[in-house]
Image (tube, rainbow, N blue to C red; front, top):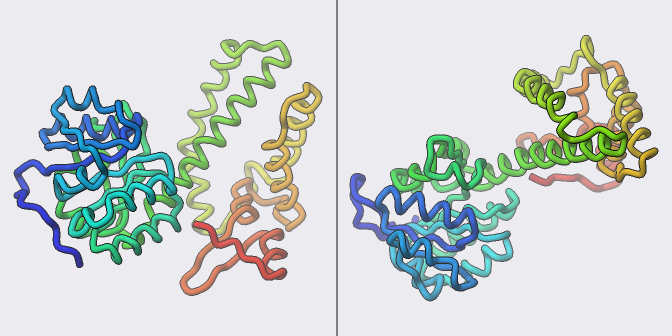
Amino acid sequence: MPTERSSATPSSPTAVAVLGLGPMGRALARALLAAGHPVTVWNRTPGRDAELRALGARSAATAAEAVAAGPVALLCVRDQAAARAVLDSAGAALRGRTLVNATSVTPDDARANAARAGAGGFRLLNAAILTPTPTIGRPEGAVLLSGDAGAFAAHEAALRTLGGGVRLLDSGDPGRAAAFDAALLDLFWTTVHGYLHALALARAEGIGGAELAPYAQGLPRLLPALIDEFAQRADQGSHPGDRSSVASAEAGLAHVAHTARARGLDTAVLDAALAVTRRAVAAGHGPDGVSALVETVGTIKTVGTIKTVGAAATAATAGGVEHTEG
């Protein structure tokens, strides 16, 4: 296990490097500065650090120089390729330190990064930031971390300045935070797409967005109970159809897709959802509750093996292909 290079006591501020000064990177740096932590900043494209330098941050010329300034480095760049490039440029300066990677990466990328950290003599925490930049450093800020529990314990005080909802996930799997991130982004972006598509459909029928919005506001109020209920059903593998069924969902989706197509709207996402629903009906889930769709779209990992569910997944596995992502 790498040895931390830190002389900080639990009550003293921790020097932190922030690598990547996009909107989120700058928000992370501001939160650390506001909490009294010495911050060194670096960005691949110069010129984004003026505000932070005015707040007391020190600017580094290279990633390696920034990392060398303290025991912890926070990395927040565009994607995995950019993250790997920064790690390459930081090189040996990372040895003996903790890297907190707040870049959006896949769960498998997070696991590969953890393996690289072990080989490179530094500790890694993967961070999934679940709330937007204005929440960082505030009670509503939420950050999930996974990976090296010892690194979290060593720098917990600094990490908790990022928001009131900072939490280390119980699993030792370094990809777990990224898995939460992907699942929640799946929910967020498909929801956003659905609303924007609804606005386009309404406009095509001569209904203004401001007219539709009050009625759309009623839908989110239905979600809290639905989220908990469907989560329980998914975990139990039980999908009673006493209130709504997959067959009724198929009819509803077909109706919406037909209406949208008649107005010349792009129906690619609706068509994909309808196709999944029809596969569920063909697999015998028509009378089941709508939550049964999780069995058609999903693959379930079990200890030591992979169990595929749904007619399409079964056919793919029979053909020698198993989808094991995330």
